[in-house]
Amino acid sequence: MGKPNFSDEFKRDAVHQITVRGYAVREVSERLGVSTHSLYQWMKKFPAKINPSSDSDAEVRRLKRELARVTEERDILKKAATYFAKNAK
Image (cartoon, rainbow, N blue to C red; front, side, top):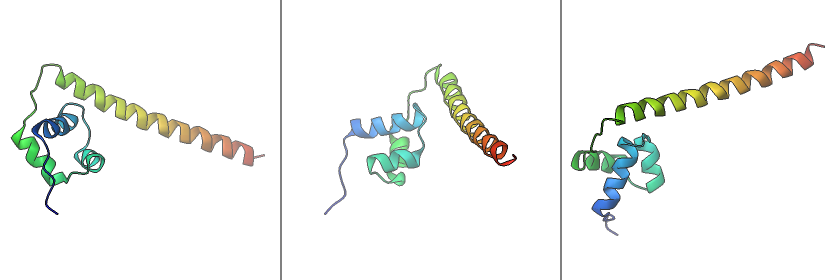
């Protein structure tokens, strides 16, 4: 059984997910069933077209990830505070 042959459109879409949408290479690799090495090669072969809004888009993605992390931490701390308040009586 040989290696799979992916279309250029598939490769460009995979690169787009990494470079424009901000997904991690490992995540895209696992989701699409493609090696990380192949993805890095495709990124060299099909560089993403950078538009002026990509910097602000990257910042928005970063802030959304940070917000999700902080929200999760807050929820954990609320649960811990409730637990300790009940056990303090």
